Length: 80
Image (cartoon, rainbow, N blue to C red):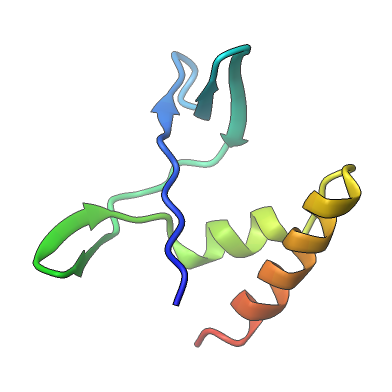
């Protein structure tokens, strides 16, 4: 199993952003909701499956990023 964590911020306009050294980049224009999951006794807010599927359905321009997006999309398509 692989777990990836990403720190996210909410912009003034409600957009969900990933803060980077060079500036924030948009992650999602749709709200992420209030889904919560627990792992190892720790409860955290998680990104809803439909938002993940939507984001991974449009591969990025970089070839290695696009390959990862396609693989992620394939994996997410099998999650009930």
